[in-house]
Length: 322
Image 1 (spheres, one colour):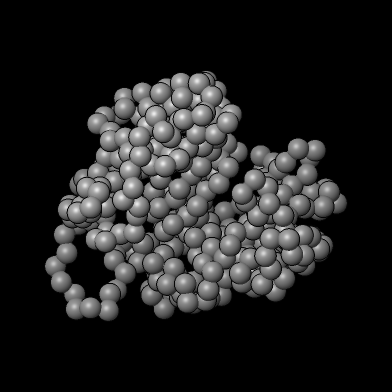
Image 2: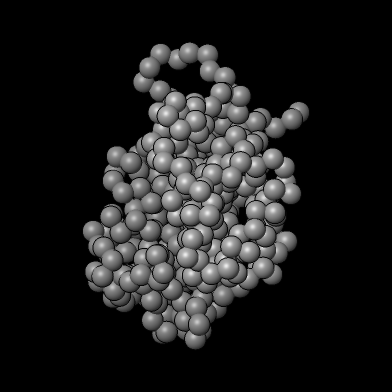
């Protein structure tokens, strides 16, 4: 059970059974209307922070408002794996709202791991949103072993140190200064030597072949926006286009009604425009949204892409200036 004194003994609990279904590409379950009514007093901007269990597995999450005044609970892969239920499966759910908006209860395994690493105090000093973001990263682990490794990475991350390695320690250059590895076959550069990738390159015209003209025009607007930040390398693949500086930081895939745009940020954002947010590490979060009209290339998206461009320059790896 989550720990941390986050909930009041008077906070209501709700129990129900629900089937995990797909909403777009994201597994979720629909929260009964009676639960939305029961927790209404705890909603903030429509969202309700909750904890408790999926089956017997403890978790921390947010109920997201949907049309009709109801709520939806998205269920990541790690939680599904821990609960032993897949898409299409039915599961017993117990929910309790968090009465303290700053509370971030720690599952016992995470709390123990941070305590052993001497990182509990540093973790608790982080802003609420950042703590929740790191716990989501841990919770998405598919196996207990992967979960333990992620707890170790979180502990190292909040203490500003590298994860301990099995090999003898050697002098290492700061990550932002390490040279990229260039594939001898395709000439593309990567952060990690021998990083898996497809050497097959494509042509921009092939990516958009058979797509509506307005989708190509939309991509050109997106390209102009990104190139306004500075030098960019355009990398066409079979069905999508990547944007690179030193590393790839964004991409776009044409669809019948628009573009699927993805970009990498060192922080996780919660916003209704995102179709999916995938956390790859404590400081690596891939955000995906669909752009259908030129006016959606607005200042908000521009700001996100500018931040992603800095990731492409590996600025997020450089130590802050004194």
